[in-house]
Amino acid sequence: MISLYVHLPFCLKKCEYCDFESHPGRLMELDAYIDRVLGEARLSRAEYGNETLYSAYFGGGTPSLMSPEQLKRLAGGLFEIFPPEENAEITLEANPGAVSEALLRQAIASGVNRLSLGLQAAQDRLLKLLGRVHTAREAAEAVDMARSSGFQNISLDTMLALPSQTADELTRTLEYAARLGAEHISCYSLILEEGTPLYNRVRRGELTLPDEEEARFMQLSAADTLESLGYHRYEISNYAKLGRESRHNLVYWTGGEYLGLGAAAHSYMRGERFLNPNLDRYMAGQRHLERESVDAAGRLEETLLLETRLTRGIDLNKFERAYGSEAKQKLLRRARPYAQYIVVSNDFLRFNAEGLMVHSALVAELASAF
Ligand code: SF4
Image 1: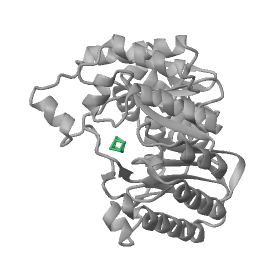
Image 2 (image 1 turned 135 degrees about the horizontal axis):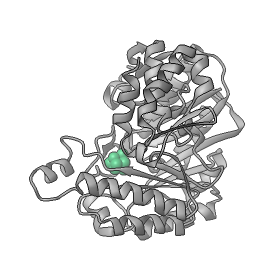
Image 3 (image 1 turned 30 degrees about the vertical axis):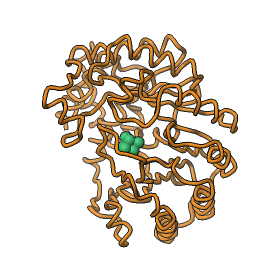
């Protein structure tokens, strides 16, 4: 079984906060890019053998900029190489300002069964500030279009701790997402990346970010709001109706293997991490750079970092099988002084809501035991 991430690095315009591998104005390269991705998938099959597909995620960039024919060719080609299992989760990321009903219908016909739409905020002034190419109403229209095209599993992305965003606006955004009937809602804190236009505006003092306490309050209130709307928190920033947790993202958070195809895509396969180069170098034929093998110590560090993001926490039996009973005892001993943040029950070690607020600091404490 294999999980695929497929990166489509094309956008209509660059958002103000974006430092992903994404390029406006290069859509004419999409056909050649799809050829290259399919070629890479065939090479990967030769390297890793015939595998069935557990999950796939078409991310970007803006994958919904593909034409229906391009999506049909890409998805059809990939699924011939790695045939999906019966319950495979196949997600397409879409921008509400760059999606058509024809594409969504083709997505369903091609086997896509989950749509991830970037709502970000329900206030057009915030969307404008972020440089998004859509309004809140267009996001609602995209959800309607997706439903009428046959999507029964829709995730909406939202953001918190935006410049000038109030806690009340965040609540209204989450309520808006719930009213649209999303099965899954992500709510990520804005990460201000150096060099982006938004970063420069904040640095020049033109925009102010919520301070640490306000951001913390927003995170707690997002969790409360979403729980009260029927979404259970299963990861620091992800909430779902029961049974609608993202299978694909759970692969990342539980240390599973995944293969990244396309420019700048990351992979973790057969105990090795590697990544693909940017669009130009990828199109010139380069792939799988910065290969590094992950030893047991590295895997343990990642378990601490990733599985504690999950509200169910670290599976202590699995931990013991992977790293030994001495390591498990060390972990439990190190966790003991933090009983106000860390709960151990039913063979799981998990961070409570307060613990998730100080996630990095707690992980550093736990890691110091090894
Ligand atoms: S749509 Fe996404 S990838 Fe494209 S510029 Fe905006 S944030 Fe970046």
